[in-house]
Length: 207
Image 1: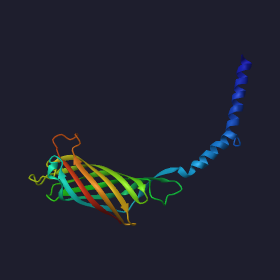
Image 2 (image 1 turned 135 degrees about the horizontal axis):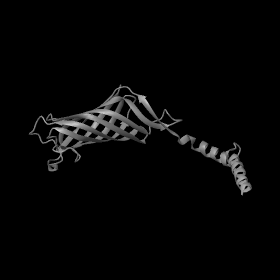
Image 3 (image 1 turned 60 degrees about the vertical axis):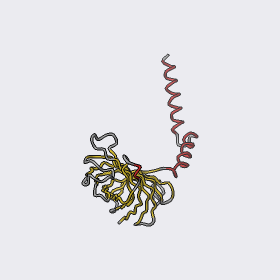
């Protein structure tokens, strides 16, 4: 019985040394696979960025009374905080980022003066060269300074701020976008029944 145990241990050691040897067929196969996938390796990086501001101008409606349709004019402002977390290929860092994550300060108001301010997180996905599809979710504080306005911001309190964007980078400094913005309580904040839709065009400037 003892001899059998010794034989099993010796066989296990021989098998392990063979598999881990640098010139083993198994190891060579793994090396080949790793080299083949090297071009697909990605890396996350945190970058310090210069100030970037975006202005979106568009039409709005109160979703509670959608039969009235959209009317001009509404403004949304995004101020990008000076850092960016992104995903890119290890060996292609100069290319467009595959994924960008930014934090933004949000300001939003209609022509009636009712407004919202807060903080958001934006996720931008590369779909074509220099073109990104983005989703931004934020938490904003709403103020209704004109209670007679029918713009969808009728109550004071916290709401969710959603923004869907399709953007194209024109140059190092300028970026154009088409946007859909929505403010609502998200069935989270009781007593704050704001419900506004916005369709707008935006321009961003990277300093």
